[in-house]
Length: 133
Image (cartoon, rainbow, N blue to C red; front, side, top):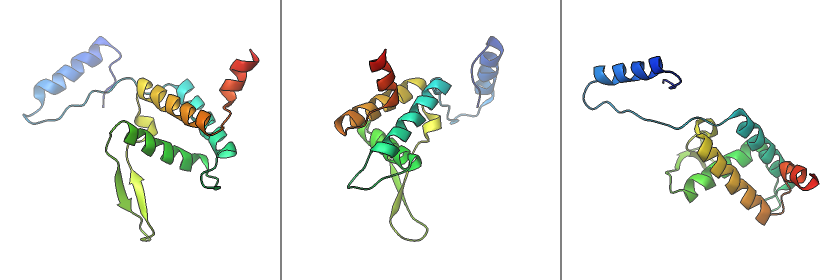
């Protein structure tokens, strides 16, 4: 993996492409999510964990992250694979990691979480800060 930050890194990428055999797959991704986005994302997940319930059940932040990532991917028409649990007790969703999301994808996901939260009575801390200003 190479992050393009300078002319020399661009030249390195071109050199790798020139040396690659036919059939080589190349993937380009936008800039990865920012630290501010990451902090806000986990704060939103914490708000969901504290305030949210589904069928009267509470879930921790990791569980909310898994549910939101799967729902977001499904909403965008992305493939979600389900793997069998090792103890044969159900299935486990397998998809992209949140750390692999681009800046724009993370913004979309957080907008999606905010919309879900608004429909389900979640009060996000960053909304409180905006309302107090």
